[in-house]
Length: 285
Image (cartoon, rainbow, N blue to C red; front, top):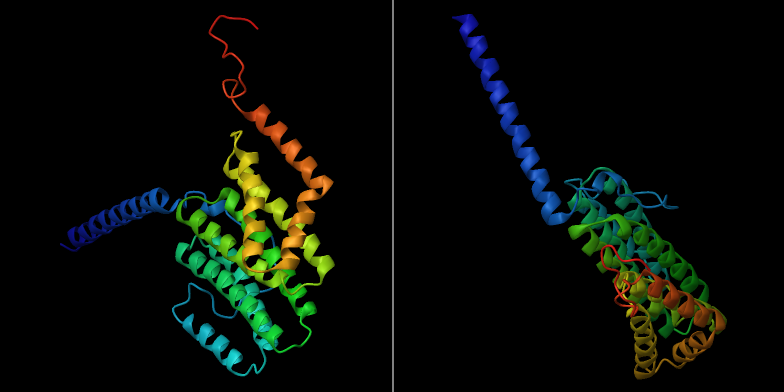
């Protein structure tokens, strides 16, 4: 009797284990199809200068970390202090993003990405408020601007390999960082503003060409971006930014990049798009 009981128990455990494995497999396949996390085990970002917070986004008490942040902001009496806190928290979230990627935790990745984007958005707003006080904020603006650039590079690395929802979340975060950076740049010295605008334009062009891979329309899209940015600067009464855009468009290196990229796109395009006859089977050229 006892032997039969043990055998029955073993049978039930084996059935339960099989069912659990099947359920996990089905769940994993669903995540692959919906969220694109099949490549999550290899997703990563470059090492970060900042470290993660004590509580991670996948912790059930992560809300305590946010309460701590709110308390720190409550004790910050100037916009400059608030900007530094938001910038520091964005660094923590980026470090936490690396950990969440290593754990394949999609929910944690989403929280970390939002934390990076939202805190840098708040930092840019804080700097804009600080400017209204008449105090010099150029050094702080440069510090936050450099921080945003580091985050942009890290997210660009992640975007290349990410898929599904993760890729969409990364792209949304990058767009948010781009808006925050533009707001920060308006507080930089004129010479730095020009340099940053030239770099922004190159990145914008690269993104547009990448999104239009193997398409001869990539260059036209990039030119449209330049025109749009200049129009926005004029409409928003941003003379320094507008002048920087005009200067960047006229830079010889930028023109050369347009030409080089155009040649690469032409070579990458199918023969039919280049106006060349498509070889037929058995024909020689």
